[in-house]
Image (cartoon, rainbow, N blue to C red; front, side, top):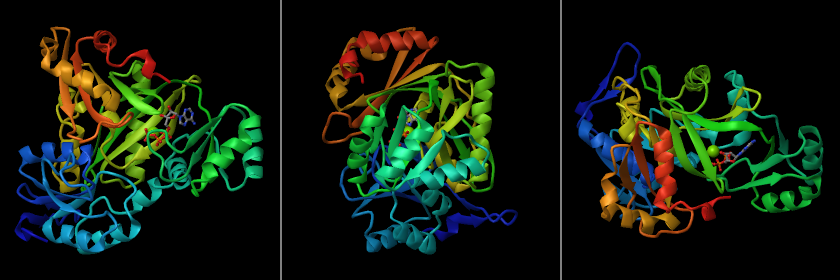
Length: 399
Ligand code: ATP
Ligand code: MG
């Protein structure tokens, strides 16, 4: 480890404090790493990203090792150059994770990654933490899918147990006649499968919990999430659900983070059911798209909180400073947003103040996350109207 003098061991709980001035290694070089580096720099940290693509979102604002994620020599190099290592995506190669844990300090460990990399393991751990999940069944054959569908009813969602993101690797079965097609499509991925009952929800919410290496836990205000085509479109904060539900959601996320022994951020996605109950959909042990609103709207951003948590610093205040709506900028929205940024509208009005975040990705493909805008406002309806009136996120993009 470099700068070993910066690493202090806190005798009381053995959590290491990684002091400002130290170097943080990030496995992955996407937008989450970029925003982590941008948030950690004011605290005095340096960043080195490991990513196969040079000059990507993170590499533009940090040092970088250009190599495949599974490259053990590169992982060893990352360990040698840094004082603490974190990751910004979940599908970290198990062997690389083990090597990094052996050679470096990885406060998040690899156990939580192992759990969240597989939907069945994740659901079992969530249930053990006392959370409610949608009724589900493991599926290993078409006959099993048919039997599970009889039990869970329609609609249900068939998902790959591993590797899914942005709604990929999912098939909503609305009718029994779709069993063969659903099984054929998803079994072709080679992944294990899980069938989940479709939760009839009032809305989707998420809570970003933070737990530091010394056990301190904190949660951000819940976000209400609107998806389009399986991809997050907007997050609305405060979420438009009763205050009691907001409190319950934050408590649930904190309980899960503690039960999982999480260090760093743990994003908890939930459905607020029509029956008034909270169902946990999935968790992610990293900064989350639905937490981007914290960047200007909270006293501490999720990225700063993550850095504080893994470095063993006291956690920052998560308080919401202003209502906010975060809207994602996908490839198909980029041109419109870039034009908007150059126009007089860029500064916003007294009602809605847009804060732009572009990730510096070279290619603007449809559905690819290129940036987001945090719309600071007094009333979230004004921000929602701003999105409509901008004419960039037309209904043609909808499901
Ligand atoms: P992401 O990476 O965006 O979180 P993902 O590919 O990991 O997505 P999920 O979060 O499991 O997938 O599902 C994506 C979206 O599909 C959910 O946010 C929700 O809108 C819908 N969905 C998934 N499972 C269910 C379910 N059991 N009941 C109702 N809606 C569901
Ligand atoms: Mg999800």
